[in-house]
Each structure stands twice: as C-alpha cells, then as structure tokens.
Image (cartoon, rainbow, N blue to C red; front, side, top):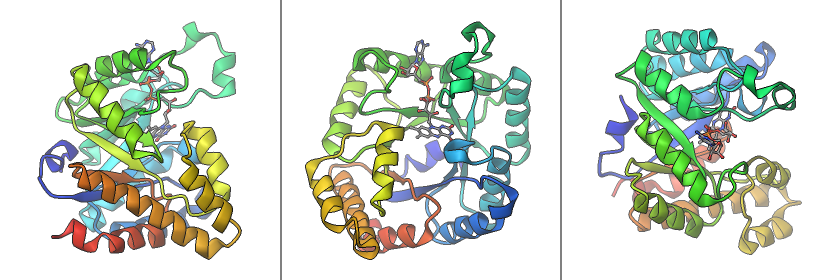
Length: 292
Ligand code: FAD
C-alpha cells in the first residue's frame, strides 16, 4: 500500500523504523527483531539505508520480507550522495521489482572521505536530484523526503532550509518525515512555517524513545536536537538504572505522541531502533488511544 494513501485515513496510527545489520554475522538477530516489530502490525515499517553503520545491501531484503511475510507495507530508504548514477538506477529497479511501492529519497550524510573529494566529482549533491530520478524511473512510486524542524545543520537559516524543502516536494515527494525532536513545540512551529510556505504534503513527526543514557550524546550528535530540561532531568535521575531509564524514556516518548495526537496529528513515526520490546510497550501505552 502507498503510504500517501495510508496517511489519508482519518485514524490514529504508528509506524516504526528499523535499520539493517552491519554484517551477515548479526543478520539473523536483527532479522528476528525486525520480524517481532512487524508482528505488532504497525501501519508501515521503514528500513534505513546504510545509516547507523548498516549495510545497504540488506535494506531491500528486509523490506521485502516485512511485506511478504507480514503484509506490513515497507518503506525502503535510498541515499544518493556517495553513489554513481548507475548504482542508483539499479537500486530503483530492484526496489520496483521487489514490489516495494514506497521509497524514502535521501541525500545521505557527508562522510569525511566524500568531503575530501572535489565536489564536481560527486554525481549527486542533494536529495532533490534523487527525487527527480525516482519520479522519472518509477512514476507510480510513493516518495518520502526528510525534513528538519530544528533546521538541517548545513543550512544557514530556516528560510533557506524551507525553500530547499519546497523544491524537493515540488520535485515529487508525496510525504515528509521529520528528524527526531524532543520538544513538540518545535514541530508545531515548523509545521506552521512550512504550511505558510505552501508545502502541503503530509508530515510525519519522528519520535525517538531514548531508553539508555548512552543514547543521549549520540542522538544529539546525529540530529543536533535540542534536549529540554525536563528530559535532561529524567536522564540525570534515572540514567544509571537501566530499567528505570527504559521506563522513563518510553513514558517520555509516549507523552510526546499523546500530545501530537491531541493536537490533531494522526500519524507518528517511531524510531524504534530494532527494539521490539520498546515498540510493543509504546503500542500498549496507547492501546485505547489508537483504537477508540
Ligand atoms: P537534502 O534534502 O539534500 O538536504 C541537505 C541540506 O542541503 C539541507 O541543508 C538543505 O537545505 C540543503 N539543500 C537541499 N537542496 C539544496 C539545493 N538545491 N541547493 C543548496 N542546498 C540545498 N541517512 C542515511 O544514510 N540513511 C538513511 O536511511 C537515512 N534515513 C533518514 C530518515 C529521516 C527521516 C531523516 C530525517 C534523515 C535520514 N538520514 C539517513 C540522514 C540524512 O541522510 C541526513 O540528514 C543528510 O545530511 C541530509 O539528507 P536529506 O535527504 O535531508 O538531504
């Protein structure tokens, strides 16, 4: 099912993100965790591409299994910045042949090796180029794009970031998913500004349940997200007790999701980090809210 159609349904729903294994040695444990998340029957599951050290070759395999075995729609991520045009064309073809209709079109992070190269040698500079290529090669595809309520770190300011986002949507994005945020007001403010700029596609807020104190520094490094004092106090108080930290982190994420639903958002994407226990607990916390 196309995610854009799913998002038109006026019911509250959650989707989850998983990342592929780094190597074949951990493939079966990651696959098991992914299947356990698929058994929870979220509205869809996104599978990252090379992000967090995962291997891009497994993205399609995992997406295909999620759809084939569990009938849960899969969103296959694809990045372009370190790829050749031939590789990208081959990946798009493989995704179509696997029957995956939903593709998340991303630029990918700039690695030091890539930055060391002359930019004129790069085949792709921005995700908008990938969106155009997917739209041309697979007109029927449902394309997602990333957006940043707290501004992408490479943008000089929010106005410039939103102008580029608009260009990406006009190139063919059917929906957007946000970078993680820990203060919902940042999301509401962003949504207001992009609507005002004429970006009208559905926007999925991305919520990351932080369940270990060690995840905090990494999450800030990767996303540049602002950590509210309320969240910092929680980590200070419970960070050294793993079970208490997991409980508090899930409660914080649940609270963010309830606030989003209460403010008229119907769909939330959860960065579930291949953790079925966390995904199940969040669903359990919301059981009545998701199925009134
Ligand atoms: P872009 O849309 O290209 O934006 C990057 C920067 O370039 C922004 O500052 C933007 O304003 C600017 N820009 C855009 N177009 C132009 C233009 N025409 N001219 C000048 N400047 C421009 N990474 C992975 O490696 N694998 C994944 O699976 C993955 N999944 C992600 C999922 C989500 C929901 C998010 C939010 C991020 C994900 N990332 C992933 C990380 C992502 O690759 C990085 O954040 C990357 O730095 C930017 O990707 P983008 O697609 O947003 O790029």
